[in-house]
Length: 352
Image (cartoon, rainbow, N blue to C red; front, top):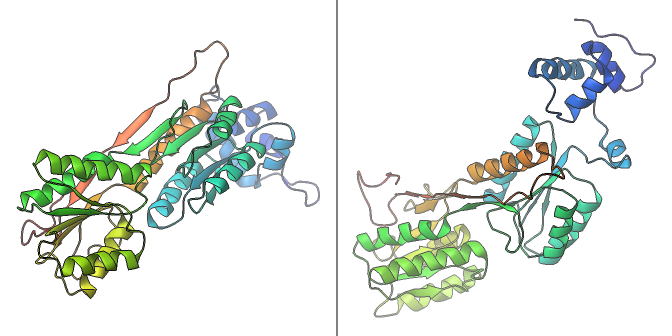
């Protein structure tokens, strides 16, 4: 089908789309705003016309009229492997809903997070997915009061009626530690950092629960913040008479530093010290001794958070409806067995 010519070189408008699709301007507007009354066949016809004429919705004009843009925001602590995967999954869902994604990395700064929350409120975004580094309850409540949907990802937001998509960190840690106990280890240390953060705290608690359930004494090192700290700790163990025979690491970066430090002290994995880490990563299988890990799916939880956000966006609140109750989704982890825990042969490679 040939598109109709436009006068001059002006950008296509909603009127051009309506003419191309042979529908009314109001119908096009309803399609662009995801109105539930539009038939699927009509929506498909309008979207096809939008593609043919090259119409691009003007978010700036929408905001001047007091309407929200077709943009969602994602605030994450950083854009390393895990959160980069989260961003790509959120963006994929947003594109399917014809929305754009604005991503901000706070560097784990609560102050910067607060600044971004204020900016988001001023920019009329359609919704927010937040991996919190702080607890700026007033600014978050301000977003909720303006009917801007918010979904917490990876970490909950206490005291607010906000949906959360989480991982069962505690149970995952218990699973990893029990696996080491099943290998006969009784002196199992737990290393990591950011011990006060929700995810690390839950994993430390899972480790302690597994140890106590087996009648073993926990050995927690929750402030191993740098590679130098890790090397100093492993050096002490290398000269100790009763060093740990196994280690559970609560973070991907801690696992990498642990393996590096053990190698530099010429301690073999798993012969001298067995290792299980929390979080898989791209090179975990390619290490000198492939790393057994408790794995979580960044893509799965981020996609679920995005879908939950769009469910809120498309379900506009009505005055007569009671306030909705926050939804909490908790995703399980799974153990990927490689050789660092002591498994070999057919055992290695198993997923539980």
